[in-house]
Length: 333
Image 1: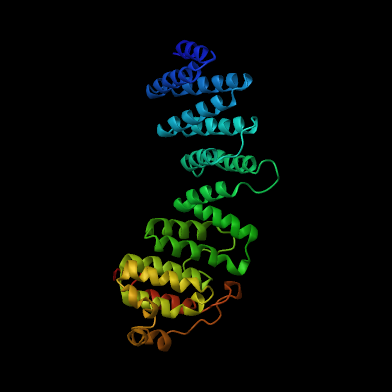
Image 2: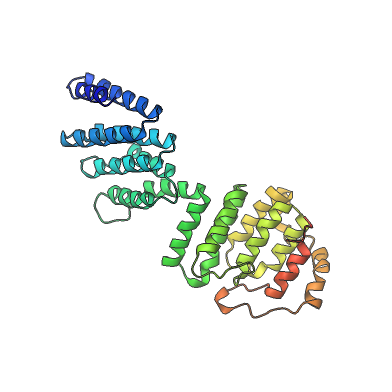
């Protein structure tokens, strides 16, 4: 197989209009090798051809071959080989005079989206890709590439959570540690993506160094999000209404929260669109009656820690009472 590939590659090296046809034949033979399961041999041949093309100044051909090879290996779940060829795609860009273009940025974003989120190569890849896209100017990378990468991370709940942990830890205020994940969870729910919302919340709260293990959490807003995710599964409007009422001080920290909740109320709790502006306050009489035991029989913990930030509304005692009222963990749903 190796001899056949090298023969095809020699034909591809000939000039003229036949050059692309020769490259396609090389790709065809390499694809056949991968399809047969000869992953190691095919990987090594890709690398051999890459360095040969690069030494001949055929940077575009080397890049195209590595890109198609990486996609092929990804399709066969050969993450290590695919990641290696992806890095060679970047190397071809770094060593050539290729200008930043939309199609190249989209190719890089495509490779990034297919990499295992836990792969160490993924971090190195995105770092080098951003550096190349900045044109060596020392900037943080091309805006379009940032946008494409962000879309990938946003679709991947765990990746999104890891990104939020890193960003919050390095650039955010400690008092706003809860707001980073709250924004993400609410937006995922507005997209009716419950799975990613749950993954983001769980991963973020487990990995963030400034968040103590919960629930219950020190930050009331995190308790609200935890309750909300459970309420979405239950689908009971009364529970949703009570939850929003009890945590209004926390929800007032960002004016967008109630707008997100308007949409969530429509999607998961049957709130009519034209009534969304008042759904939080409607039914509060019933909610107050049903929660009266919380205020009379359970001592309010008014000392939610100062690190919780603004909007403290439900202490640990009320957290447990709210669990009982809503049936969370008691099989009432």
